Length: 264
View 1: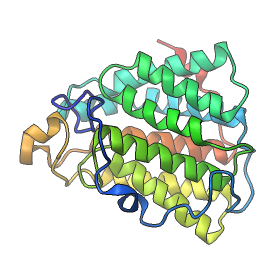
View 2: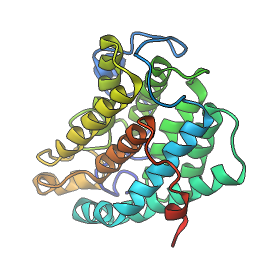
View 3: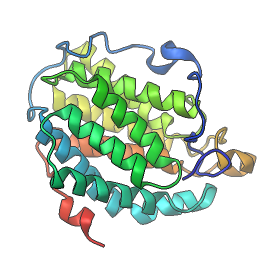
């Protein structure tokens, strides 16, 4: 992954400016709750600092497991470095969180975002970093499902603004926007937190798979024209892993993957 003119088809870190389509285009539903609002049923573990640390530990383990697949996806339409770059970056995140444990969810998200920006090459570090740093700035405590959904939506909007990408451009937006929409719908329907995150993970996975028939409109992959069709976007694929990790941790599954992530 890398900046425009590089690429796996992900929006580039160099791109700034107004988000394509505006906020209404992003979710179509909205969370319907402020960052500190309620919404959604109970269940699952509390979303405290430990929850967010476990999220990044689990994400690191999933990315390590799928590192070669992500790199192969990137080799088809990009720089063949997405898996290795993101694996390295999340290893650094896990180490940073373990070395100086943050005391709040916002601090966990901010540390993770800043670490990804500093340590990951190409576009994926700045792009993922923008999501998590914005979430860290906006998330209210104690964290509720509504608060998480609102902060996640703001993080995705920050990503769209940075990359100037929209749904259908064959980028990570194609996985993250459906996940954000799924959380908004879960809030509307009053489902429990673990189920809401499972629905978001499913939407992200479906969105990533949905990039396969698309022609890339961003990044170096866009230079391939019709030859970009038939390949899953690696950024969308890794985004789906982040949501899968979130669902696992919310359901009480394994979070501490620091050992696996830290292994060479």
